Image (cartoon, rainbow, N blue to C red; front, side):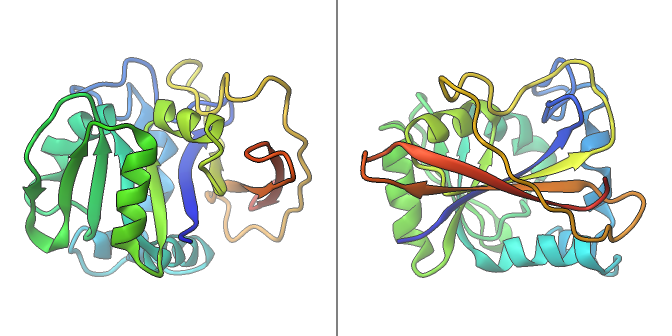
Length: 224
């Protein structure tokens, strides 16, 4: 079965966007600072149809994520915020399943991206994405509310946080309210690839004998 993975940038104070995120400010006010590290990477530029870019450990992380993903699930808010900035050739290049309460015909874009609007809930969207992904994984793109729903429902297998050394002081949190008790964390930090690289905290889950109860652990990489 396809593994479900969420990989997102997050500030030191726990936000994945700046304040007042929405159609006018998709990443929130000042939220682009959380993602600046990725914009110049070769793998990310290739997603946008651009040439050049830097290589190294950060680039390898993004390239590996692209290679292992066969379909995407995202929330309605993320789609609305990104529809215009993504333009005619969005950076996904694979089927995207949008969890929404608003029925809409499939939108086919250039470069292999197609947006499918699913009104039957996250589990149904995931089932469709898994079928489309085949042997590859499913990328959970966000936003925060949908990630929280996946964690609560026991649907998320892996969460990789790119912890960026900035403070937003407000914005959209990622995992608040997802578990009744704090998860148990274990961390290790390989050498940092560069002074501007984020520290990475990867979380993975394991099913136990109690059904969908999950045990969460973590590893870290990047700067201390």
